[in-house]
Length: 408
Image 1 (spheres, rainbow, N blue to C red):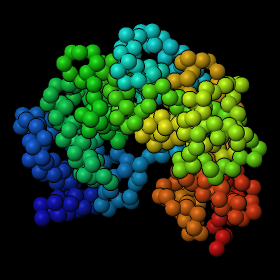
Image 2 (cartoon, one colour):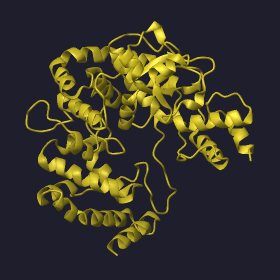
Image 3 (cartoon, one colour):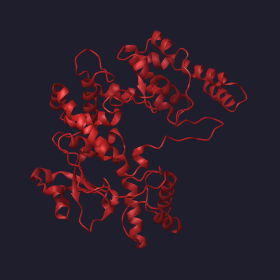
Image 4 (tube, helix red, strand yellow):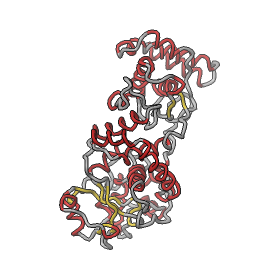
């Protein structure tokens, strides 16, 4: 009944019948109701009162469900709405790689310790840091506690954020970071390498040995924590993330899904050729890999290993993994991808959603409708193109959308 009363008060306020303070009062009541859970998690009363005093929701955040207002989704992430050439821009990669090479030397002892302990290359953790916060030069825009409290109150994943909010209070109570330095993204990720509070507790590492895990100021701690997260998600030491290859003209782009995995040697015998004449060892050829063609038959092709999908657990986007993996490689070699990105254009999110619904309706697609043209969507699209006698390129275009919409 208490929760119903809180929601009712919010509805009245947000519809305009009462001033905003009515909603804030309901929010304050909601926050107060979390004290028993916070106490059970080890948050002191003093910490709870200090960090929640005067706390107000931020209704301008995305991905909220506000009564009386149209539903809003998460903001369109660049990883899912930009074509590869716009997301993986050569000038940005070159700039970050050059700075990353300097950081390799600056943090050499810590990076050596990370490689020795976790088996994750220094360049990979540096690339994550570079992509997430521009090596710490990007200041995250939001107050962590306010973000998590708001998302717990009116977000789409209330239960998840309820726990994250309480864990954020626990972090503050333990003194790992001060409130003013606990900045966050709109989704609540915080620190140099962008962790949620639960990830801080699951994967945090005190590498600098000062007695606390500080992912906000301590580069060794942040990078070691990123490495441990990768290891905890299945990182395999000594294994590359991917190999760029030239695909044969007969390539079947519908095979570009994680479920189609076979030894790299089998892909090579099928006509895939490592770029720049690279010769792969017998152990490398024995490694299982999946085909990735981010632009369908256009642009570069890759054979992706298990570690590719581990990085994808950090951010579920093929372009994110390509960015991080390529940036890591560029710290060792200045060479860009051999095959350039094409001049493809990206359908709008709502059009990709329409395509996914159409492919679902006619039996080619079984994944979620999310407006993101990922591996499964591209493969389903290619399967439809095969059946309809169209050019099979596995790339979402307006013409293919029109064909799918008219299909029965």
